[in-house]
Image 1 (tube, rainbow, N blue to C red):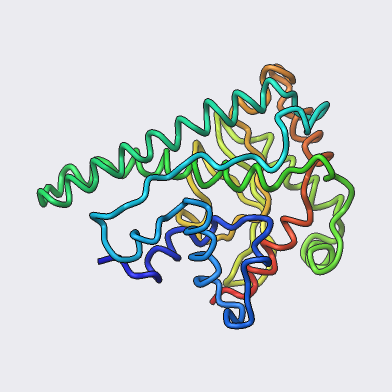
Image 2 (cartoon, rainbow, N blue to C red):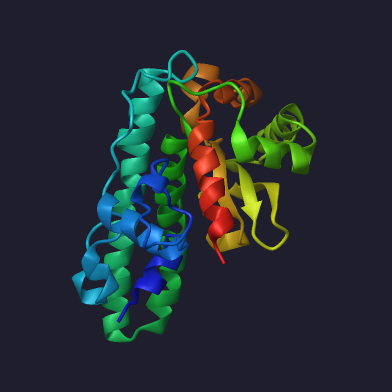
Length: 257
C-alpha cells in the first residue's frame, strides 16, 4: 500500500507556478498536502496511487501554459513543438512502460528485474519531472529581474542578481554532454545554490536540493536555433524566465521540513 506521504515525497519537486492557488487555510503550509493536491489535479499521480499499486493512473503529458510560438524569438515555435510534443511525450510514454514493468516485477518478486528497471525509471521519470518544471519556469511575459523574497534571497546568497546569473550560466554551459543547470534551494543550509545534473537526473531525488529554475541543455532544447553555441541559448533564456513561478517555488521550499 502506498501512503499519501510516500507519493507526496516522490513528487515533492514537481510543483506548478500556480502552487499557491492550491493552498487553503487548512494546509498551514504543509508541502506534502500541497504536492498531493497538485499531483492528483495535474495527472502526475491519480487518487488511486495513494491507496494501491495495482490501481495506478498513467502519467500524461501536461499542457503548456502558452502557445508554441509564445516564447519567440528566444525559443522558436519549431523547437517548442518538437521539445514538448515529441521529446517530453517520449519520456512520459517510456516512464509509463517502465512503471508497468516494475509493477509486474514486484508482483513476481523478481529482485533482479526491479533493480534493472531503476535506470529507465530514473531517466524517463526524471525527464518528465524536469520538463514539467521547465515549461512553468518560462513565460512569454517573463524576463526582467526577480522581486520580493526571491530577489532578497538572491542578493543575500550571491551578492546580486547579475552575479547569480553569471554563476548559473557558467555552470550550465559547462555541463558535459547533456543535462541541466539549476538554481536550487538547499534545505540544510537554508541558502540558494547552483547545481547541475547529467542526463535527465532529477535534482531533488539525487541531491536533496529543491529545484527552482532549470535550464535544459540537451541539444534538442536549442540546436535548431542556436546550433552549437550553447552559451547564446543559455544567456537568452533569461528573457523568458518566469521569476514569479520561481519565487512561488522558493516560498513552498522554505515551508518544507
